Length: 349
Image (tube, rainbow, N blue to C red; front, side, top):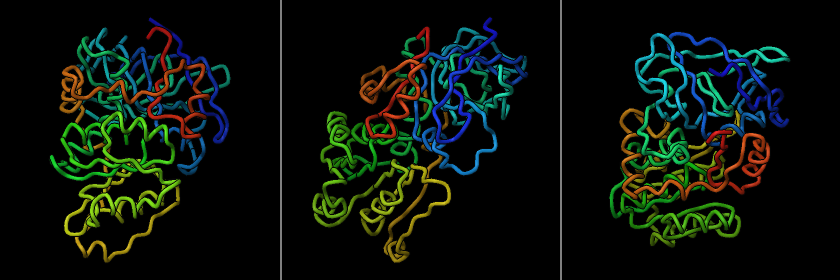
């Protein structure tokens, strides 16, 4: 049984993560020790590192909320998984016991951790943050089932319940936006518009199923979308950027009398958006989403079935795959717009 884990730790906001060896604590009854295979890297972590989620009271702390691995040990009250099980590790709560935080010892003192952290070779999490998956599901693609797919595809399947033949625009082509695009294609949306600032992301979107692409740096996004939709606007707009202008644009291009805008991105702490309330009177709808309204025990299984049948080729979402030692390079690549969905590959994966 391992006694230590290597982790990427945030000591100070706006500074690079530090690789630190941590002592693995004894498990509480509801906790699970997972040997991580892969971790996804989400924009949420970028906001934490940049200090844009508000004052950080828990420094130093570990990071990461999406991944896959193998259960090594379980607490005395855990019934959901057993040692040897492959699991998805996710910030989205499922059934089972919860332990809200963990503390690790290091040579420099205590390092805090929430209920889930995945930027580490072994992680102590809790029963409700793991979902067992079949051995036929590759751990590489399974890592996306912790956040990107449940949130992005979940918006399409659960939040918006997008219908065949509808029109959809997705703002932002990171892991969540690309997942939403892929799911919209699966649901046979007729018009699927992808919006981003980078041509290489728009190229990827076309491969995944976008029927139209718009570089928001080069084009008037609202004008382009209205032209594509003959002036009516789209049935559904999904914002996955975490940007005020993108949120306002997304709401502006949904049609009157029933158009729906879903906000999935996180803006910086203290920032707000502005809308014209008359648009609400015209029947436009604006909502948020909590992880695509995902129920892990139900939805992870369905996504795995769709992946194994070839209907959701999850591997097409992955643009970067690097070892834990390169975590800061991946963060920088995400900040500069290079990344669709990046994976951190742990030692034995």
